[in-house]
Amino acid sequence: MLSLIRAVKFGVLVATATFALLGAPSQSQAQTGTVHAKIVKAGFIVGAGGGEGTLTYHGRKYHLKFSGISLGTIGIAGVELVGTASNLQNAADIAGSYTAVGAGVALVGGAKVARLQNASGVVLELHGVQVGLDLSLNLSGLTVAVQPSI
Image (tube, rainbow, N blue to C red; front, side, top):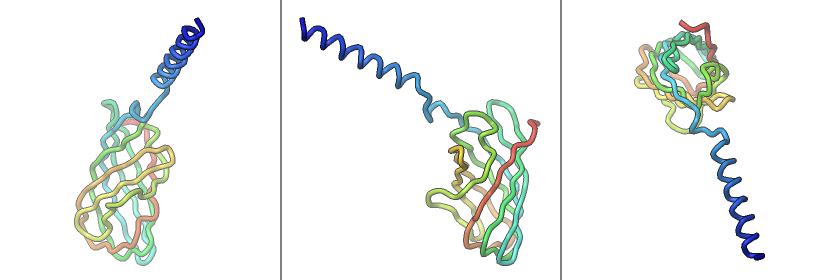
């Protein structure tokens, strides 16, 4: 009889843990959107840049504004980037300041690849081709603002 009670308690504990894990929000419930951006950057030692773009998320387009600074910049260049924004719970999550994460940020001429993350956990993975001369030691910060939907 005592072993039957223990088995029932264990079964209830396992069932409770299973339901708790299934009901908890997870990163797998986060969504991905498509990002298009046109950014221009210019500077000598300290550079500044900005641009515009769109986020396509759940069939709607949201207008984006980009701004940022970089150190060690010499030149003027423009880049058109496309890619994804992942870990979105809603379109407003894309807003914020981004920093480079992981390897693979190419910052000297030609093809550009960037993997950036903001405080909300949104990850931008962007790629494109640069036009112009831009010698840059690092990407210090990129800020994205969401404008009213298009």
